[in-house]
Length: 424
Image (cartoon, rainbow, N blue to C red; front, side, top):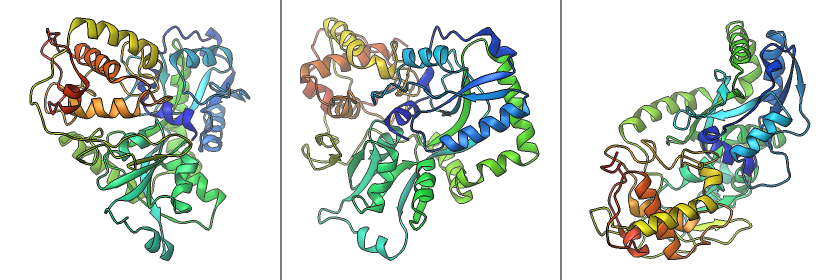
């Protein structure tokens, strides 16, 4: 799964801004369907096999698009606009679309089938004698964990304690980091582990559940608005394939191990009671350049938690206005024009700022944003610009403006939980 797919998977809010998707009316009743798979997906072969079986069962001939979703040669993520263009131009339905319960695209104009593969992100380590020699912590007590840049893998990785991180640009390289000893563990999309094992059958990994709300995903069929009849036919076909065992046979080698799938359900239940603190990293006294090692990109600073204020820091109206402009220029492509989520998580609403008991602090969010965002150029803004962007995020999540300007120091030092502000 290359960076384009992992960025899509980073939210099926993924599709929450995919407005004005025009799909040919013929898709409702056509006996032939153009099918796209996600670019670089390690499960592409499975997705095509399932699509053939499903559409054949539904009485629809499948024609696979050679171009594919957003197959334009870049790795800058898939915007809602690009997704819309691909659906209009190249395909009628997308097979292998990742969908998550925490980013379900409920506000999207796309339609989804039931899931045909329960998958997600897992923690892997080498199995066997070689693992014992490589799984040794550094003198500072930290181990190196590999993750895929700008993906749910990265969000999950920052939950880990006593760790430094090796960020790779593809999920294949993330698995390879463990196999080649660049990291002791990795947080990675499970189909990438399956694909790696297919290519390297001698390699064995211990696989464990990744306990995070961003870990659990299903692969589905996605199509544009006005395709209710098509999705009903797909769902009916999936039900038939599931009942006669053919779907299980197709997906058997790709499914999460039973122990992992069970553990994932348990983890999800516990996470409902105690949401993950996915923006809080290792507590440190000062920034540490060695916390992150990004392959092919400069290392960014560590994640810092600093004790300070207990109330939300103040910000003024001018900062909100400037922050909105900065957001439109640098953030909206991935997070959506209205912060609703697109190829990255939503930055508004209960999944980001719950009514109460948030485990994300304002300071933690500011620190993550200022050292890791925007994903294509981390740290490109000045301290003042990141502070203005934080003011905009606070305002859109219900906090009122004041007469005191928000500074980077005040934003970074805030330990106030990010609960929805009183305006909500």
